[in-house]
Length: 96
Image (cartoon, rainbow, N blue to C red; front, side):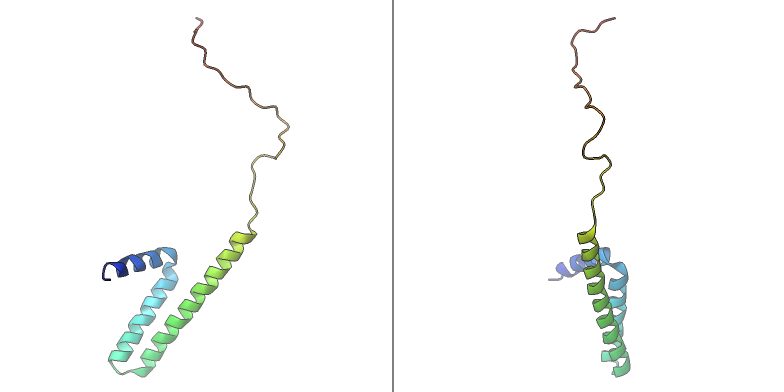
């Protein structure tokens, strides 16, 4: 289980570093508030984590909508007006 946590954290930080940082700050605040019996700090930390998770899902939903509506760009028209290029054959005889 200990080897699994660094892998999960590394994947999370690579995908969305800002939201992961805010979740980490909120979790640290919540732990400090819970251990030190400071319920206002605990509530602030839990609220920060909750808002960050909600933002993550909003960003995730928005990225799926942008990917679905993206129209592919073509560099050449479908029916090119230029004739096709001839097939090049490599001749074994080299003329001087």
